[in-house]
Amino acid sequence: MTGSGEANKNDSKQEDKVEEGKKIREAQVDPNQMKYGPVKVYFASQTGSAEQFAHDFAEEAKSHSIWCQPINLKDFDVLAA
Image (tube, rainbow, N blue to C red; front, side):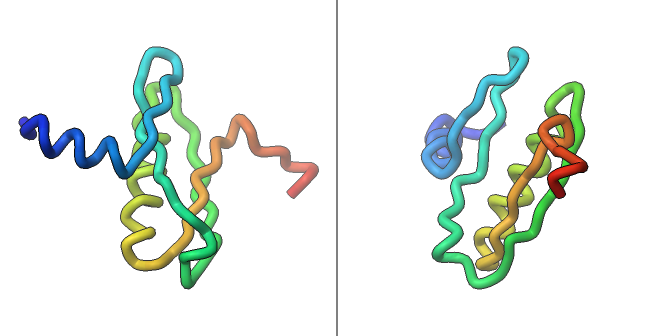
């Protein structure tokens, strides 16, 4: 278990999103401050685990100056790509 101070620190870096009863911490990235990217990370999830992993991955990539864009496959339009 983490202490409440540590949880609050993570919440300040990431925005919470409620989707189907789950809270997803979205990565907060300013693309203008990133050296590399965009790297598109596609995910499909029923429980939210893959979505959370994609956002966590994007948050970690930010620390390496890589701009990652998590994209839900249900929002992906094959004809537009």
